Amino acid sequence: MANSLIRSNRDKTNVIPKPAKQAKASDFDTNAGDNKTVSSVTFDTNLKISNHTRNKLQAMAMIGYAENQRLSVDTAIQSFYEQLSTNEQREFDLQVSTLESRDIKLKSKK
Image (cartoon, rainbow, N blue to C red; front, side, top):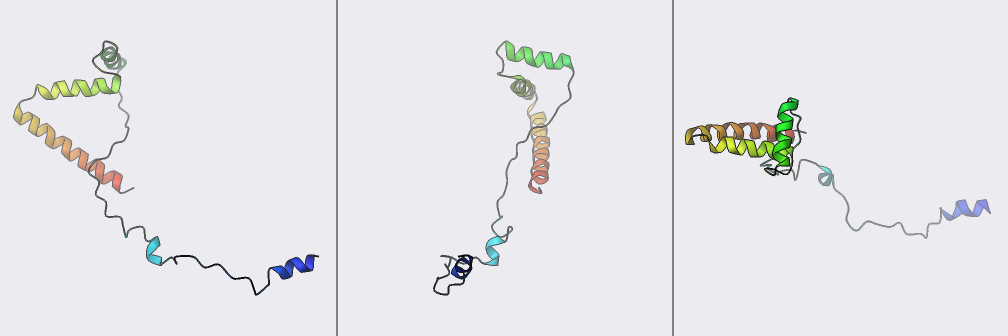
């Protein structure tokens, strides 16, 4: 019985299946189709703040100015931005743009 099982694998009449498409080395090149340009990246960071600042952010959220503390920070920054002069807003936008470009460069290397 065991002898017949061994011979069944050696039967020459069995046809070896062929793939529909044969792979080429270029199919596995990871840099070939990697011409994507990233315009923005978003990731979480940590910000060390005092408990007093955290309480103020939470209070903003509790009285309805924002949904949560993260959006409270965004609301405060937007309010600050709107009080800047046109030249100061342009300078602020330039600095933010420079920092965003740095983030894109750092994250796209990984």
